[in-house]
Image (cartoon, rainbow, N blue to C red; front, side):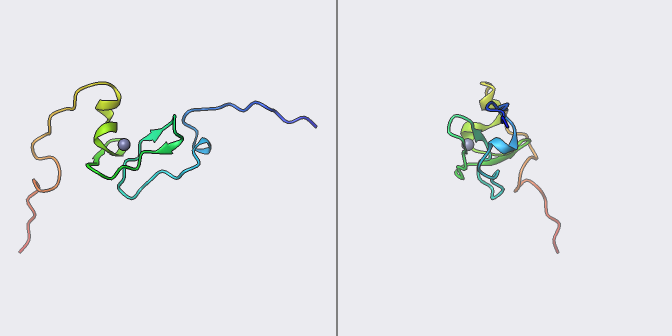
Length: 83
Ligand SMILES: [Zn+2]
């Protein structure tokens, strides 16, 4: 019996990630070089891919400047109707 010695090492296969993607509000950016999630909790915000710290925002990862904050975006700007 001969087992395959080489396995397709995909970058994005869940099996290649020993840790579970953080869902506790910490940065969920996968640091491939360190085989771990960032998990920084300081200054994280919610982006389309998930929670990201200031160093791992989608714009930052693309080498682009951060988009300006949109008016009416985020908590605090929402008018809660309570009475
Ligand atoms: Zn991060």
